[in-house]
Structure formats: structure tokens, C-alpha cells
Length: 512
Image 1 (cartoon, one colour):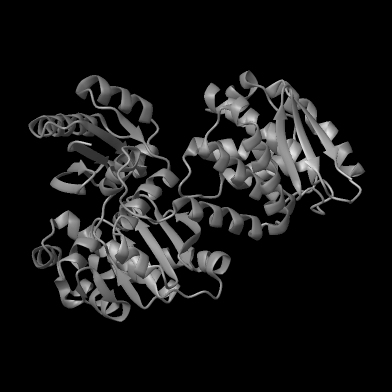
Image 2 (spheres, helix red, strand yellow):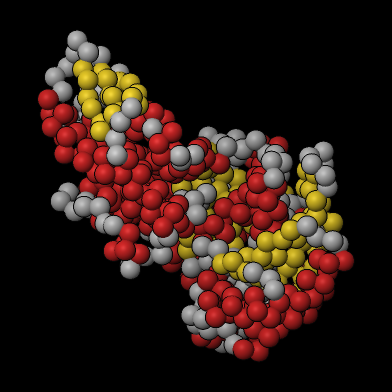
């Protein structure tokens, strides 16, 4: 692989940023330029629900400037993403169309989970530092303009994640609307932030404490990385020292703070909000240490691009994190891990046996595995409306690492495992599922349905089974000695949709 030049563009809530990278198999990713332009899209989006025409003009002019910089570096490829400010504006599609027509740059809007996964990848790209940190119980607080994401690691694995509407621009907007003096920012922020964090801890963390807090933000992280304020070294700080630093902020004016910390006046205000937010999170988590790796979403965008080009940046297993998150969701809703593992074994065997017919790959196999783990989470809410309740749980629970469409695929597979399957025209009328995704839903649902039938009694009678495709039949053989009459009856009812999707007849053969 020759050296490629790549640009990662972040259309954020407070500023627009572009990083230029060189990518090669020998040296991996190397940042060669970083340009930023302050543009407060979040003020419009969070306060009025729409971004003004004047800011759209400025946005397009900045992107044209970025385009000229890309030309000067002879950039081979680029990715441009918008985050919460664009995501929450009512006229997002119109803005995207204007940007494309006026600049030629395609800006895609990330869902919250997609945005956080890129930030997470940027932290994981730190390799050994990241791996050493998460050996102890660790939380990541990822601070954006509109929201924050808190994620918990236990035993090197991401176990849950949750989004809260406590972004720095949103909080600063509340303070400005309340006309709070800067000297009172701390006490008012404490009330606003703790009202959500107290509930978060009761539901998700309970009595858990963490050792380390990893901070991803645009305001405090640069300060910690530079060792400014005497509380850190290369991004590390003791929480007690950091809290002491936060307590000094009310006594300093905006101009003084901006000069001391090498920030703009507006950046100083946002730093104060972010610092107070981090301080409240550390107290909630009872964390001992803070680490700010100093990464941005642009690093995650570049990481993802490198992955697609076959350049390995880190050995961290992200799919393992997603599986752990799914198991924790299932546990929260009283799901049986043993039942999920049995169903997964059966479903994946059938998937592998049918590979020549369905043509799906590793990622679809992984989505099927997630569907088996979450197959009946809705029973916790309503035993007679399992499909719809399961769908709502999955679609309203963050799983960092899945795209919005992948989460929909899993949710619909689980839903249609219990309810009547909807055909494409019906589903497309009420969702953004495209034809390709619908076919994946249908194929995976067909497999999950017969797999569920094979373990209808929940007694794992078919764990010793083999699936083999022979001509137009899928032969499922079991050498177990238990009576499977109940399973055969349930299997027969589920087989019709499988035959409709694949034009293959599934058959059970029990060896005695």
C-alpha cells in the first residue's frame, strides 16, 4: 500500500475542524495538519431548532476553504460528518443539500451511537495506554455540545453506555438564558448536572465505583494535555487536584482565564462548563484518576478509514464490547444467558450451513448473534406483546459500535421473531429501512425463527445438533435422546417463513 493522504472533517456544535493524515502500512496514521474555525451552530440548533441562513453561508465558506487545503495536500479521500447540532436541527436535509450543491462536499450526519463509537475508537487508538487504563474499572465521559455519553468498562470490556442531555453548549445556553453570573456557574451547574447524574447512578452504577475516568472533550482536554494549571502531566490528573483547580475558576475573569489557559474568550466559558461537568462526573463515579488522551472525533474518523484500508491501529476487540453490552441489556430485563447461548449456537450453525444460499458475511452473522441475545428482552415489560416491547427496548438503548441501520436490523429481527413479519412496502412506509437492509432482516428472521423453535422448551435439547444443506433441504440432525415432540411442533410452525425466504425446506432428523 502506497502512502495515502486522508482528510477528516468534523462539523461540530461549536467549531468546524479538519485534520489531514498520511496513511501507510509501515507508519499507520500520522497527523500532518489540523485546522479549526469557530462556528457556533449549536446556539441556533439547541435554542431555536433550526440553523440560520447566515451560519449556513459561513459553514459553506469554511468548507470551501477546507477544500482548497485538501487540494494543496493532494488529499486522496475524505470523510465529513456532522454531529448533534446538525442532528437536532429541523432543516438538516436542506442544509446537507445546500452544502453539497455549493461546495461539492458531502456531509453525513452521525447518530449519537455512531458519533460516540468514533470517539471511542479515537481513544482506543492510543493502544497500550488505553489498554493499561481499562485493566481497572474505568468510565469514559465523552462530552459534546448537546449531549454527553458515559460508558463503563469492567474487566477490559465495555459493559454499558448511556447518553445524557448535558452537553456543554446546551448547559451554557441554559446559564445564559437564566442570566447567571460567571461567579455562580459552579453552584447552578451542580444542581442541573446532579439532577441527572443522581438518577443515572441509581439505575446504572448503583454501588459501583471506578478507578479511572477517561475524558474526551474539546475544552478541558487541551488544558490537561499541556499540563496547564498545575494539576496534570501529559493529560493525567488526580481527581482531588482537578477538583481544586475547578474551585479556583469562579475567582477568575473570562479574559484572565483565557490568557492563562491559552483559550479564546468563548472557549474559556465552555472550558468552565466542561470542567464543572467533569468534576461532577468524577464525584458521581468516585473516580481516583483522570486521563485526557487529547483525541478528537477526527482521529476516530481516520481510524475507521484506516481499518477499511486494512491498516491495523489497535488490537482492541470492539465486537466483544458490543456482545458484552447486549448481554448486560438482556440481564437488565431478566433474560437467561444460558438460553441466549443455546439459541446462539443453534442459529449460527444454521447461518453457516446456509452461507452459499444467503450470501451474507461476518457482520450479518454478528447481528444474528446479537438478535439471539436480545431475542425476548421485551418479556420484562409485557409477556403478550414481546415483539413490539423488545423492538422499543433495542431502539432506545445505546449500543456503541452499531450503526443506526444495524440497530434497526437487530430490533426488527427480534420483533418479527415473535410477531407477524411485515413485507417491505409496509415496513418502508413507516421506517427508513432500505431494500438491502430489509432482505437482511428477512433472512436473519427466518433463521432466528426456526432456531427458536428448536429450543422452544428452553431445555437445551438440541445443543448437540448439526445443520447441513442438501439440495433443496436443510437437514437438522440431533443425536440427543430426549423427547423433542414439542420442539418439532414449534419448528413446523416457524418453518414456513424460512421456506418462503430461501426456497429451502428445513427438516429435523433425530438419530437414535
